[in-house]
Each structure stands twice: as C-alpha cells, then as structure tokens.
Amino acid sequence: MILEDLLAKMNIENISIPVYCYHFNSVKLKEGSSMYYHFMIDDNKVSFQQKEKQVNVTVPYIFAASTKDNEKAKKENEEIFFNLDIEYALLITLEEEVVIDDDLKKALLQGVVPRILHPYFRHSVAESLQKAGLPQLNLPFFENVAEPIDA
Image 1 (cartoon, rainbow, N blue to C red):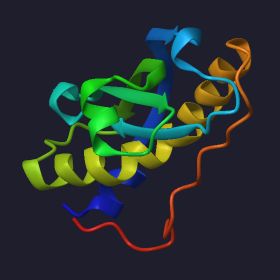
Image 2 (cartoon, one colour):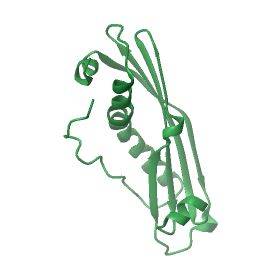
Image 3 (cartoon, rainbow, N blue to C red):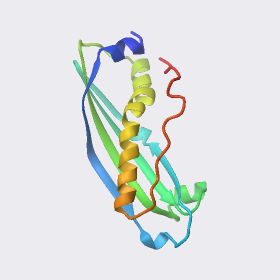
Image 4 (spheres, one colour):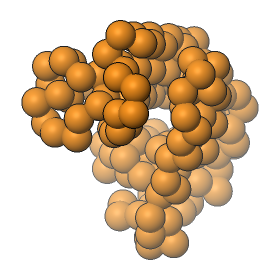
C-alpha cells in the first residue's frame, strides 16, 4: 500500500492535548534583551499504536525561548526563560482494517502528522506567550508543504 491510499482511508476523529505545561522565569529575561527560540518534536517520546481500525498517535512538542541564540544556551538552559511542553494525542480511524507497515508509519510520523498538528502547535505557542505577557511571536509555517512526502 502507498501513502496516498492509506490517507484516503483515514479519518481524524480527535485531536486532544493531554499535557500542556509552560514555565516562565522573568528573572532570566533582562529588559531590552532579544528573544530567540527553538521548537521541535521530541522524537524519542512519539508513540504510535494501532488496534484494528483505530490508530493512536502521541506527539510531544517542545518550545523554548532564550536571550541568546546559541547551542550552549539551548543545551544548558542557562538563558532559557520560557519553556513550553505540549503533548498532542491524535485519534485516527481507518475505513477498513489495514496493517500499517514500518515505511508507512515513518511517512505518517515524519511527514503527515507534523503537518496536521503544526497549526495547533503554532496557536498554542502564541497563546502561551500572550498569557505570560511576552511579545507576540508567530512560528513559521512549514516550508515546501506542496512537495510530495516520500513513502
């Protein structure tokens, strides 16, 4: 089976946020300092479970804002003043029972699911920064979304 065939048989039933946690340390944010950020999916904690016609995917995202734009600040958390951890749970139903092999699973987890969840993550980041009283930030859209996904 190819990815396009699988996608035609999929329906997104539910997107929920079982974990939504942020921490703001105003002491680390000096007046007039610049805000640098990075975000990523914590690939080590992504889970994928299929049971008959139901697929459950859990995807944890991490966002951090710091006053310095360098790898040391990211790794040692010295200059990080805002952390956001969000876990999304995606419930997908299949119109018919299909065994999703490793190649399709990889294409879903690395290409399709991030494209589904990224708009929700962008909104959550913007909302959390606003609630913390920090400057507005709009994360970029995915680039090259029109390019085909390998599968």
